[in-house]
Length: 430
Ligand code: ACO
Image 1 (cartoon, rainbow, N blue to C red):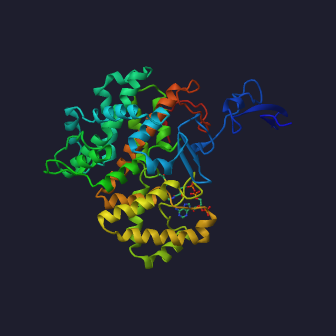
Image 2 (spheres, rainbow, N blue to C red):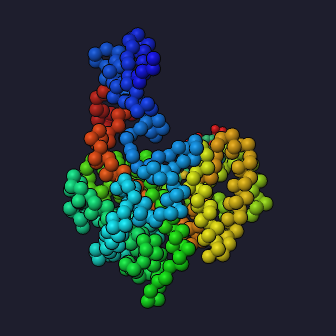
Image 3 (cartoon, rainbow, N blue to C red):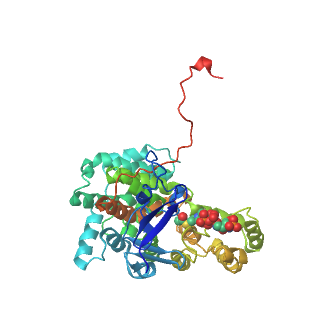
């Protein structure tokens, strides 16, 4: 008869323990603490740098099956949401758990549209950064600075206050990002236009010059909206984990999200699309692809935008982005980098090295060339990622706060440093 337990024998002592299996997929790490050599022993810990096999929480937001290439937000497949939904509707879904009714959507849209402005002092704050300062540093700092304008955000136990901060963050992220971009160009700041959509308004704040009203290209506006949807959440990735970890100290959500933005800034997380663009430029023309593939196989270089820790199949977001790339190039004119990317993908997907290792294009393989065609400088790519991911971070943060099992994030360590020793005065040190 099968039992939902694990029987563990400690060969150091010969004792046997029965550990419950939770949800048919995990064991509680705390159950290992009872395994001791003697009464003075602290008990066994589990060692897992990088959380490769540790579930840090129970979540009901995003489901990924990396083997099958499945991504769902709150149960809805990503391709259906990309085709039929809008970013704001997806943000509602992710943060509240269900798709909105028409009335709920109208109210949500109204709230987001009417929280887009920044306190005027924040313009001076953003202007005080160096012109060539990386926009991710500016965005992370400005989001943390929001906490000084909204001290009510510390009321994290109050659902209304949490909701208000979510409106503020979703609404103000595009404004902060656009102001950081305009500052880098030395251009005046463009205020939000409430008559435009979320992504249309963002394009207006980025690119409007002296025309009385900015008219976003509808295809580019739609593509950007879909890109925000594709980046909205990805379960317990590095920045979501940062959001939860910083937030677990019960700090306000602005400071917690500033931590998440900083985590995303790193090249191993939000920066790979930039690397893809550099790689495609370096390859230069289709004839150079076989040589490049050889270098990958000799492990001299990596095929950037390929491979994923979780997906061992086509990243479902990459399939959608590839289609979007074609739509964008119909507006902006063709980009020779796309031809190189398509050829590279074709060759790699047939090559035994990549097939055997289950290396497929990931979300970053095509997103960089789309962003480039739309006129975004490379430094802005992770910022675009952060705007979409705001929805996921906020949902992860609130889920963590409402989870009775969660405590302040505080891992254990295996100490291998020096034992106790006496202080040596400086003149006696060797
Ligand atoms: N090009 C060539 N070979 C690769 C690549 C690649 N892009 N990715 C993995 N491999 C090979 C490795 O050399 C290794 O081969 P070996 O077993 O013969 O030594 C094998 O595939 C497994 O690779 P790992 O590095 O162990 O896989 P891991 O899951 O740790 O890494 C990662 C995943 C970091 C994404 C990796 O595939 C990579 O570096 N890809 C390129 C960078 C990239 O596109 N990052 C974006 C990820 S998506 C995102 O974060 C939003």
